[in-house]
Each structure stands twice: as C-alpha cells, then as structure tokens.
Image 1 (cartoon, rainbow, N blue to C red):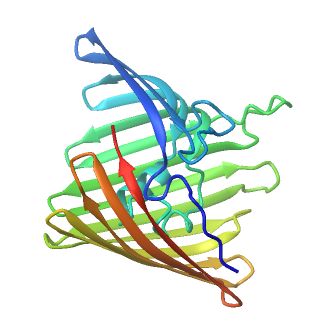
Image 2: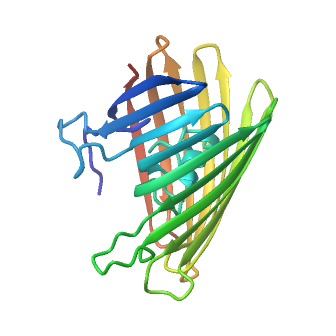
Length: 269
C-alpha cells in the first residue's frame, strides 16, 4: 500500500517563536523564549499553544538558569549530532528514547572553556501530590574544540510503576573533516522504554550550495527484535533562509519494511 500526501515538518518542525532579552545590569540578562509548533499543510497547532519551548530565565556570563517547558538535554544533543539536524528526514529522531520537551522544568547550564555542563529537573506534579511520580532528571556534559565535538546525557524518569524508574544514557560524537562531517549517536535504555539500544551513524558533505546527507541506524527492542533504518538525501540552499530538499528513507522491522520519499521547501525567518 502506498500513500501520497502533502505534509508539514519534513526537513524540520514548523514553528513560530518569540525571544526577548533585557539587560539587568552587572552582566545579568533576563531571557524569555516562546515557541509554537504548527502544521503548514493545515494551519492547525498541537494540543498546547507553546508546545515546544515556553521558558523564562536569567543568564549571567557562563551561567544560565531557566524555568518552564524546556527542550530536553537528550533531544538537544540529537539535533546537534544528527546529520539531518534531528528532523523527520533522518533516522536519529525515530531511534531516540527520551522526550523532546518537558513541562514544569528547571534547567541550569554552565559553560567553561570547551566544556558545557547541563542539568534539568521536571517536576511530576501529579494529582496525588507526589512530585517524584513522573518526574524527570537529566545531566549532560558536552565538549567542542576545533573539528571535534562530543556529549554524554543521562536521563532518569520516575514513572511510578517501577522501583528504579526508567533510565537512558546517550553518547554522541562528531568529527569535521572539512569536506565532510561524520557523527554517531548511541543510546542505551532500561525500564519501561520500548527501545532497548540504538546506534545511528551519519555523514554530511557540503558542496557549494548543496549538502549531501546520509544516515544509517539500528534499534533493538526490549523483546529482542530489531529495526534497521536508512536515510539518504540532500538540501540545496537557494538563499540564506530558503532551501529545497529531498530524501529517501527506509524502516525495516524484519517482518516488513516501509519506504518514504519526501521533497519540499524549508524557510527560516
């Protein structure tokens, strides 16, 4: 069976955002971020108006603290190290374990030299008054120097159903050779996650206005079955803010396979 459709969010999610910064003096600034996702094909939005990020915070030099609905540390790393930028054309997003955004969160970031340290806590806020039920804790360390970059993110979810909750550890790294950039993302999960382990390898190669993209991944489920994922495509920059793209992807679940071809236009403003 084949389906032809006009869809939204091919290369990246469609959203409109607002950012505000106010200088408070003595090197301190107040920062606000509001991001609302929408479907460009129908004009509809998700269940929440600002369902991506909705946060307010204070930044001072190398320190930043935010509160609200925050992008998870795990998804931030996927967007950084995925050859397809964490979009729907690649395979890294499909093989990721942790949530992309967490509500009721407090986050802290410290930058020191080539290292960036992050920590987040999302309160459960359950009706029974237990702030730990469904709470999420995450810590990260990232490194970037010259052509080398790497990160590690550990996330723990107290789902209330398991004694030790659900945990996932994500390792990522990339090396920019100049003509091409290679990256890898590996994740290991335990607890109530459906996915057990996953590895994604990607490469991007810019040639003038064209960027060739490819990624291959494998995910193992807790029942022992395996999913193989492949994606190849490219983008052509028409200007600094507008590009066209095309990609072919395949998901093989051993007993069946699904193919997808997508092409479209991406504009940032």
